Length: 260
Image 1 (cartoon, helix red, strand yellow):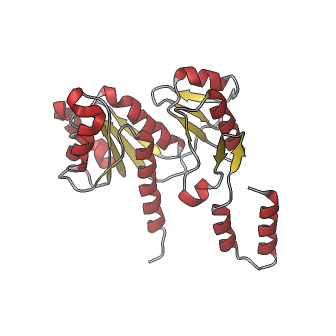
Image 2 (cartoon, helix red, strand yellow):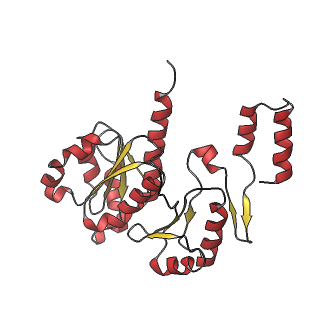
Image 3 (cartoon, one colour):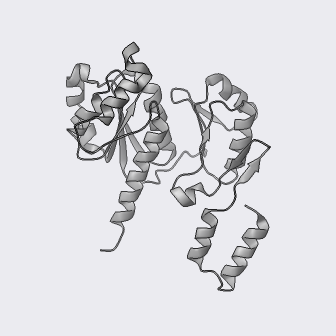
């Protein structure tokens, strides 16, 4: 954001040349802030999409992640970097002492000392077929929690022991959106969608034997689901599943607030 451009816009609002709504539209598309010679961060992403900028940590250096986190932290209460290994986190922490690490989710974050308030309405329930799916599921869970949603977890309830799922029907019944994470043949989302009265976000994982082709087999199973109400994200994309679930809840909340 350039101060001169912002000052000009505010002056136009003050003189009535531009309405507050028009000014908001301008602010949604302001130029991002540069970080070093390697990044341009978007401070207004939340205005446009409802969720702030998040850092893709994989393939960035610790120094790059640290600098981007500090820059985003000047405008955001919560800053997230995904796909950060433990070794990379410790190098980031040497520069950003406030950084926290969620090891199973592989998320590094700046979070208020008081924690993240529940700013969003609705409960996101996250289910896994097996224990090996936990890293992807935790990426979804931590992302949703840091975005201000209530999250309920139900692990290791795959179709190989379907009684484990059926004995936890209450979790499915309480959820407003379900994220179902599965590898191998990826059948769990179809089963869950046949029991649920809410949207199901299916996440294929790269867990499985050779013919699962690194997650392609469960991806195709989920795309070919005979159950209605299933949306599918990319392989191992727990973050994307959480944001999609959040957008569903935010949209439902917005619609419910409209006057008929």
